[in-house]
Length: 213
Image (cartoon, rainbow, N blue to C red; front, side, top):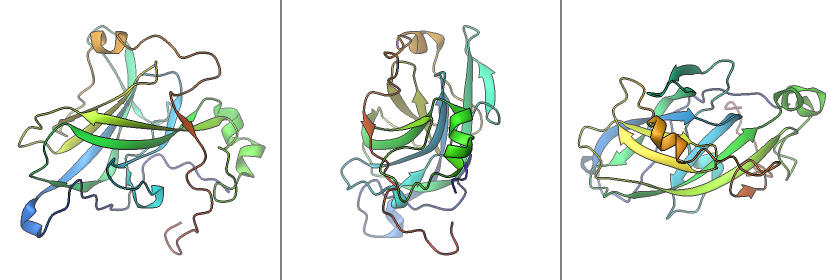
């Protein structure tokens, strides 16, 4: 059975570059996800693009479902949704921007189908395809810099034309893009397309971890 997880809370350690001691680490960073699209975003995860992507070992950035995520208005009055992941990852203080990350996430374009009978009977570990009403997506992005020395948050911005933008900042308050930045990516994708690169279900064939799922 599939359970919708809007915020994955277990601790993930993520080393963006190799380090030799704990002194090389500046501390933990949180993640926030901003949804400017017309669809729900589920199970967002990411990893250093230079590493082999393993979804089970990637950093979790949560989900953005319209019904239970936070919402606010851009400087031009447009509404957007956002959420903060419960926990964090480790960031190498010697990391130079831009940071290249690989992202994997699920776009839920039909929530009724996703949560309906066919969705409830779907086993993501036994199916190569995505759950009914959804598509799995992937992107490699550059998070521009220089990263502020006091940065403690990585923001991921999902835009209507399929572009994903990353930024470093502070975690105390929402930090959305400007209306102009969103409008620059406002052209919707063709009907039936939900991201620039669709992929097979990344969880297929991965055994469940006892006491964790």
